Image (cartoon, rainbow, N blue to C red; front, side, top):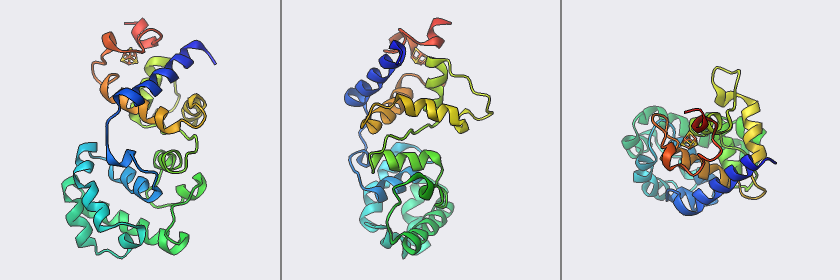
Length: 216
Ligand code: SF4
């Protein structure tokens, strides 16, 4: 592995250790909580999800509770996130499917996870990494941005986050047994420093090897 890659990995892990954002779903290994939270985090902010997290899991402590809930009750709890009708329908469909086909368990392999309604590679990767400790990548737009800037990664895909080469590239960087620290470290770093507009390159711990910074 090149020095540039090793340096990146070290900084990502260090960011997780020292600077990570503290959310309750990051302190659990429960596959149910992790799956549902990853779905809730779409098209909303982590702080908004945080505001309903405890109430949600108090009302629905298991997938079985979620599967028998009325959509009205779900909508009421999901209201602060917006799109509550759509979210409610999706969660009902997903939980009923899991109860009927997986005895209420969240699958522990990529293939089965991708069969679930509304679950894509990022969410599946999030579950495998955080709940089942499998060294699987989590590539969202934040991660794509850092890979393009720091490593100069070039994708031929219109949406680089759908590029399997990028997923493979990120997966190879994950240090054995450290997928949560690495994946979430990169995401939090990108959210704080390598932001979409005006990245904070001057204070960035990665600027030493960053392609983007070299070409400024
Ligand atoms: Fe992002 Fe700038 Fe840091 Fe490069 S130096 S990783 S572009 S913040």
